[in-house]
Image (cartoon, rainbow, N blue to C red; front, side, top):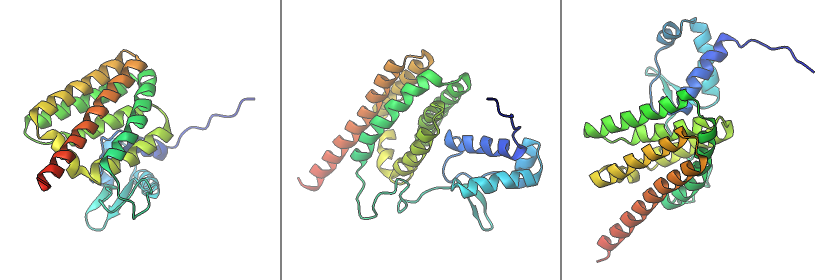
Length: 239
């Protein structure tokens, strides 16, 4: 009934480490990777080992080579469609956020049960980075994405992780301009920051029900914010 345990190759470990950084959102879309030589030195492995891992990531469509520029995490353009929707279908931000309610309430429920201490440290790091960006007068959207992807990674469910990555590529990098308004109002930023901390606290307490409630409150707030903004824009165009 037992089967032999096969040791992992070094290239597998390199591949998994880079893949997980992408899935966690720490290497976000458009991010340039270190050179092959730099990666080999940082990881303490040979360049052929790094090359093999990189080739696997390219095959999976997670990274791409750009001639004369380097290797980058794939960054979908507004014309690309990671969810495979028909090209003539106009994607509504409200539709996307409604789907996000189901996806992320499910994800945070699993994360509350399965998150490791490292996962929680990753989430905390994302929130600190988000606060630092905002205090510096910048948008905290990238750190926001990383926080939610860290939750997805904490589910330990590869299907959930893949779905969430494609979803966030579309939501935050295909129509990112629509969401930037969330980060332009101080009162909104305070609410979002508090909601994120509530989500993390529920995960820390291993309270899956409370985590789901906190996530639903957060995404519901974003959804109502965007609906109100759309209504205001419509009124201004048709006084």
